[in-house]
Structure formats: C-alpha cells, structure tokens
Length: 386
Ligand SMILES: Nc1ncnc2c1ncn2[C@@H]1O[C@H](COP(=O)(O)OP(=O)(O)O)[C@@H](O)[C@H]1O
Ligand SMILES: [Mg+2]
Image (tube, rainbow, N blue to C red; front, side, top):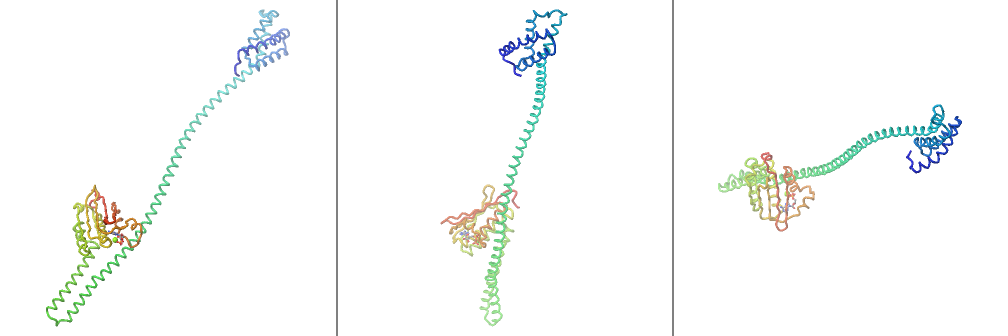
C-alpha cells in the first residue's frame, strides 16, 4: 500500500484518536467481548484509511496518557495496564492481518518476478535462436533462389547449345554431301574425261599401225599429255582432301604449295608471309589454320572478284594470328552468318574449327576495300605440340 502523505496521516490519527480513547475507557471500566470487538472495528477503520501499526501505537499511547487520571496504570496489582494492552492487541488484529496478506502478496510478487525473469531469460535465448534461424533460413532461401536461377540459365543455355549443335550437324552432313558431289563431278569432268580421251587415242594407235612414225610420235605425245593431266588432277584432289605436306613438312610448306596451285589456277596474286615459329603449334591447331586459310582463299577465289590476296601469320601476345586479306568486293558479314543457309558452311565452319581449339575468328568486310578473315589461336607452352 502506498505510504500516506504526513499531513493526511496526522489528520486521520487526530480524527480516530477520540474514538479510540472513548472505546478504551469503556473497555477499562468493563472489559468484555463487546469492547474487544469495538477495538477490532477501530483497527479495521485505521487499516482501511491507510494507517499502520505505528500510528495505532501512538494513538494508543496518547489514549493511555489521557486516561491516566481515571485509571492507575502504574500499579502492578491493578489490571488496567493488562486490559489496555489487550484492547490494543484487538485493535492491531486487522492491521496485522492486512500486513501479513500484504507480506504474502509481496513474497508472491517476488517469487513471480523471479519466475518471470527466468522466463524472460529463456525467451530472450529462444528469440536469439529464432533470429539466427530466420537469418539462416533467409540465406538458404536466397541461396536456393540463386541456384535455381543459375540452373534455369544453364538449362536455357544448354537448350540453345543443343539446338545449335543439331543445326551444325545437319549443316555438316549437307556440306559433306555437297563436297562429295563436287568431287564426283570434278572426277568425272577432269579425270574420267581425260581417261576416255586416252582410251580413244590408244585405240586409234592400235588401228593406225600403218601411219607414219611422225604421226605416231605426235599421238603418243598427246596421250602422254592426257596422262599427265589426269595425274595432276588426282594429285590436286589428294592435296585438297588432306595435304600430305602438312603432316610431313609443316604448315608453311603446305600453305605455299596450296597458294601456288590456287594462284595458277585462278589467276590470283597471293602473297604469303609467315612466322616460322608457327610450326611449334600442335598438329590439331596447324590443321585448323590450314583449313581456315583454304576456306578463306577459296571464298576469295569464288566470291570476291579480287586481284590480290595477302596472307600473314605472326605471333601477337601469346597468340598466333593469321589474316587473309583480299581487295575484292565486300559483303554483309553479320547478315550472312545469321542467315542459316544449309549449304553455306564455309564461314560457320571456320569459326567452329577455330573455337574448338580455344581461339576466335573475326571477319571484317569494308565496302571498297575488301575482306579480312582473322583467326587467333592461343600459343602457349601447354598446347604446343598437342
Ligand atoms: N572474301 C569474300 N568476299 C566476298 N564475299 C564473301 C567472301 N567470303 C565469303 N563471302 C560471302 O559469304 C557467303 C558465305 O560464304 P561461305 O559460308 O563460305 O559459303 P559458300 O562459300 O559455300 O558460299 C558467300 O556466299 C559470299 O557471298
Ligand atoms: Mg565458302
């Protein structure tokens, strides 16, 4: 219970004091249950108005002093002091009872506070655990989302790659078929026609045994020329399919032989300059460079209407760079690459071959200047001789 304001306490004590004195007076004169009940009632009033044991003790003290004239408190034989004490005790009962209830409540409160603080600690611990769990789960959710997204991107990429691969396979099959048709046509036109010619000449020789020696020599010389032509044609096919010189002598001799033969056949000036160290490249990379040069030069001969081509191979910052530049008519590179024509595998094939060995290919075509095909292949110790 909150403590009373001192002025109010004084007022309450002064108003209760006469009642107490009067009741004590009655009790001292004739002690009994009724006066004891009165004492307890006064105690209840004191307790309900907020007074405490000490206030009642003072009121009692003052009453005893006031009644000292009427009753002899000092004499041990006189029972007045005992009766007064009994009255005071009865008055104290409600206060004491209230106080013990308050003490009990207070003790309970302390106990409850202790329990509450224990619970609060357990709760705080639980909260911290929960917070950590929330953070962990949030991170897990982010991680799951991230990897889901990564898998989705990878999946999409793999689908695109699959589609590209399927297209490329189809293109390769078509191009192979086209190449076979071309070889078969050329074999028929060049070699077979020449062999038929030889046959005609030989049968004429058999029949015309009567012709003069001079005519006979001329016929034999014609037949020999035809044989030489066929031998050359067969050599050319073999060279184009897989030049033995590339394996036996190296890239530069193979390119020399190829450019020489092409420039003779197509009336095209080809200038070749090459860095000798290129031969240190592994066989796979040298083959890639040869095929790119072959395709680029064939394209120049077929499409560019150029008069000059320059081919250059050099080492640039750990890479081998090969450039084939013509002075012919230009073309729309991006558009041509994007147009998926089944029979046009030259440009796409060049890029695929170069990328297969970790390199890159770029084609620059400028109106009025011509076209440059540039292949760059890594030239490091690991891949040398691979
Ligand atoms: N050096 C070049 N000069 C001009 N046009 C070129 C050159 N190289 C390629 N092209 C153009 O690009 C097209 C595609 O070339 P390519 O893929 O090699 O197929 P193909 O040679 O079978 O036509 C050619 O048809 C041609 O129009
Ligand atoms: Mg081509």
